[in-house]
Length: 142
Image (cartoon, rainbow, N blue to C red; front, top):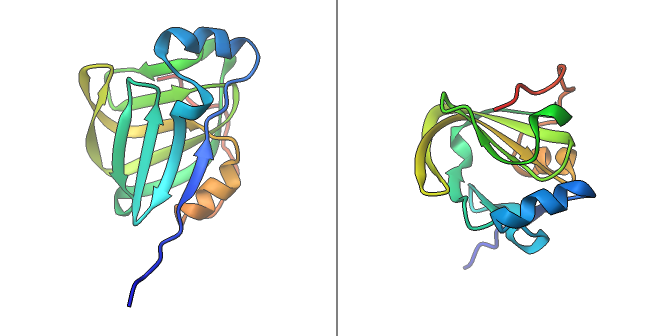
């Protein structure tokens, strides 16, 4: 007997001017996504970020808004926040129970909070098993 697990893939769309800024990072519609499959979240943002994260480690997930002044592209504050921003506006904020080690470019970074630009935040939150909650203000820039 085989068990089929549905795969949910969510694009991280670049719109307008943000597309121009993402070209140097190798980010394109085909290489920027979040995919949920078999209890894991696979996040890819061009060649500089390609990580698998266990969904069991997601403590909280909610919609947030990314401020325009914080920019697009890969971001980190080197204190636990990482942001993969392909466009301004709706963003999802994931907070982890235990910090995870990720590689951004070639630099290993500890990540407790991950911000993602997601095409359909509500569906994404359903797919990872976290109900949509109202955003509380703007996201803090990473």
